[in-house]
Image (cartoon, rainbow, N blue to C red; front, top):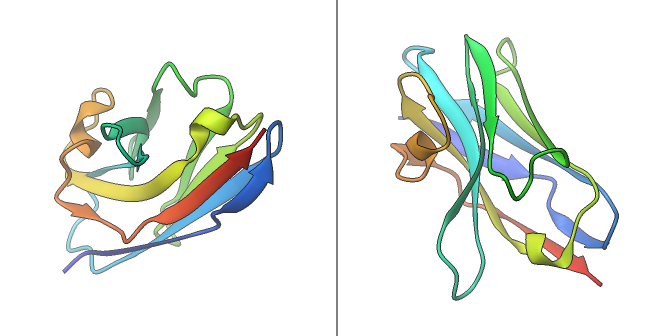
Length: 125
């Protein structure tokens, strides 16, 4: 069973930075599209970024392009999300996700096979 555990959330003022991590375990193969989605109360789930665990290649939602960077350490089976220039509208619960196959955009991690328990990010004005 794949297990994803997020960490690194917290509270920050607008303009600040946070780095989220996602430790993965239980993989039986490495053909996974990995990514992050977020959900704020009363809002729809929003896909943020994706990267293939082996192939690399990244995609970003327009709302975070140029501010967020997704990376992975395949050897450590860890996914990261560096978030810079944070805005109050980035406030949400952030989830790490994994879906078998290539990424080809953000869609694969909107309804993923696996996801973590989430980590809260709060950005104050």
